[in-house]
Length: 418
Ligand SMILES: Cc1cc2nc3c(=O)[nH]c(=O)nc-3n(C[C@H](O)[C@H](O)[C@H](O)COP(=O)(O)OP(=O)(O)OC[C@H]3O[C@@H](n4cnc5c(N)ncnc54)[C@H](O)[C@@H]3O)c2cc1C
Image (cartoon, rainbow, N blue to C red; front, side, top):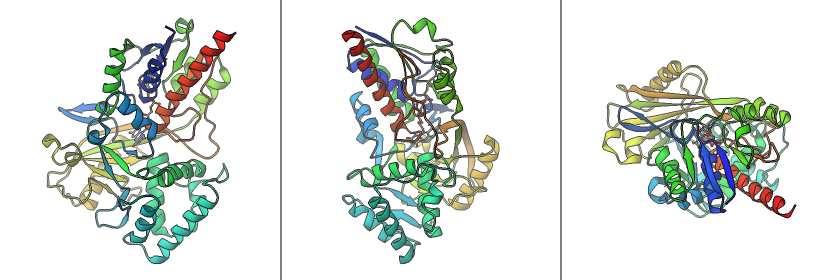
């Protein structure tokens, strides 16, 4: 069997490992941390299985969902499927009804609460214009430029939350062309594509744990706690770099300085997840609520962990997510706590635990150049930052793992025919 070494066991590395095993490769996966999962993994706090960051998937994540099923995850049980719901606690906002696409879009826009008919009509007109333009726009355009002229309520209750949760950047900085691509896949990708899929289990149970078991059962070698310092010991066979861009940049300095510089030049943005204990009954219409977000009230979404997990130990635990966060963990926690008290009506809330991931996502700004998937003759790269259509997401990570294995096969075929 042909051997491949995969460096990094996040969702991209695990995706590459599973697809490589399926393609008949002998896989060795080296992960620096004590566990796999990377940025999307469980963190245990006083016996509670929380996450490094609250995640949300959408129905358009087809490769991620297929991969989860391949390793035996029951996606219907582990993910709560909800039609796209961006409603604030007072009921304002948009909720798509459970109808086939694009009827759900039209009915959802028509029924949005807190919007005038003029607001709804201008969004429908703009959406039709984007469709006529095949969801394409100049590469140097920002989301704010793309959406200029839309009514303030549509910007604050729809565009801004969608933009910041998909690209982890405010609309004035985010790439309009990537935003349009995500919108196109989510809104016009067929029935169910725009659904929100909210994890009911912790992020490690959602995929990495099952992937590790699946890989071990098929003879793959998995080594955790192994930080790769230098590529040279591994270069006798193909290597897939599935570590983050700054690590991939360090490891490729001598083999491809231009690629290394490109990966090292990517900027990053932060995400904070503040877990709040409500000390009161949480009784929302949906398990996820959109929040009115500002510099002083920075969280965009709140998740009712007990309702999602069905776990009594999670009673009153709310995960509040601050995408594109600024400031340190304590400042963010205090601002989010005030927001929970004011906007969620929880005067006795306290902070349970907060995680700030400073390099959560690469900054998906207009004209950002993403490195290719092949930095060296025998060296491939995968990860959410590698060239591809999606921003930093689980789907981007999983797809890049699939792409790396396709390149691996091509490499192998070229060697065999040479
Ligand atoms: C707080 C937060 C919230 C997010 N929310 C969402 C969301 O709601 N929806 C969504 O789709 N995406 C979300 N994302 C993004 C998503 O988590 C990432 O896009 C995805 O996990 C990236 O996976 P990856 O495998 O490319 O990289 P990583 O997860 O970073 O994996 C890289 C792995 O390489 C290992 N490694 C590093 N250096 C070495 C070395 N030298 N040797 C060996 N191993 C090494 C690391 O330990 C790590 O395990 C979120 C991210 C964060 C941080």
